[in-house]
Length: 337
Ligand code: AFP
Image (tube, rainbow, N blue to C red; front, side, top):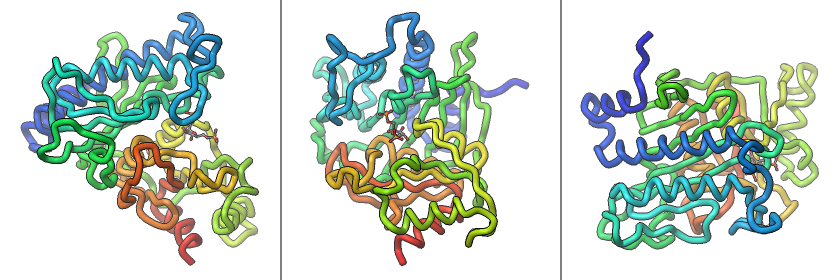
């Protein structure tokens, strides 16, 4: 079968459906090339001395207060270098950097803001489990030539593109432009992303949940009730048995949900009251929430639609409940009653 490449798909979207302006098509192509380079580095792992913590003696801490892995730093550098000269961006923001990254004055600027988690799940790297890259594209506010943090603080419903890559047995790029969700698998011989799934749809019901159960004692009562009912199985109030999966790499857990349904939960917990959840809104929850909604699923904080959350800071965290629509409705209902 003569499958379309990412480039062909984007050209069709641009000319047949007028769904992607030329600059946005360039942005996606550039990000996909950066993802290929990250995939190659992730694949080398120990062979290239790329495992373990970054910094001299392994003591490199990022803005999140988390130990940076060598590959976190490398992935961040690859995305910055790939995107700063093309003229498609007004600025970038990353999980690994305190504030926005300005486009150097020697380069042309564009109308888009790119936000990314360069390497999600990086605590999985040293154990050779799947990791990934998550990205989100917003429009730079009109008339703003030197974007500051406040220009990035737009609700997820304003995204123009969202995507993520999973560096697993195969490298897969998942993308939405607001007209469905599509998956492209990296053909390493061609060096191209090939369209392998079009218009992905998530089953509205599921019997599979993903949560870090070790945090149960820190959850709010509605979440404890919801999970306890899943664990009670057929004899319990849900009347059916559930299975659990937790890869501790959001990209891998979300990819599974896109493939066979499920519900992903990282709720607010009182382990650290200063953090209303672990996942970051701008470059983890928002892109994933749009992708899930575009695939027929739902994504909430438990109290409101994730894409409607009005951001207050670049690295803010939110509770995340997303996946099969009817299951998200149950857990959200418990949080609102
Ligand atoms: P790292 O990037 O620090 O590995 O965190 C990954 C992550 O942000 C997300 O991808 C996982 O779903 C979640 O954290 C795993 O959190 P726990 O380690 O608390 O289970």
